Amino acid sequence: MFSHVMIGTNDLDRAKAFYDKLLGTLGVPAGAVDRHRIFYRTKTGTFSVSKPIDGKAATFANGGTIGFTAASAAEADAWHAAGLANGGTTCEDPPGIREGGGVKLYIAYLRDPDGNKICALHRLPKEA
Image (cartoon, rainbow, N blue to C red):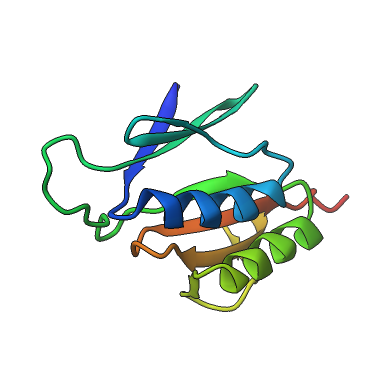
């Protein structure tokens, strides 16, 4: 459904340092800088961070969340730790299992240095 997701930043260098470390825990290669944007490309889609083209300050979406797929709960925990170590702040409940609607997920939430809400999500197998 999605070709890419792009969020704003006010500091491209800080955003690149943060997301290179953060997404590296999920096996995503370091981002490629193109003028005022950073692109992280995988087989499943593209995540990008950009300085706003209109020259105004970047702001985060109130109520918006960008989710990254984690291969395991341990990978989500490593993602969360890398985020905290590189300028992110924790938000929501601590990393852990969330259940609802017959689905069991392991989720870790952060805010990036620009305030964007992001999460790592691992879908737990259904119990037999």
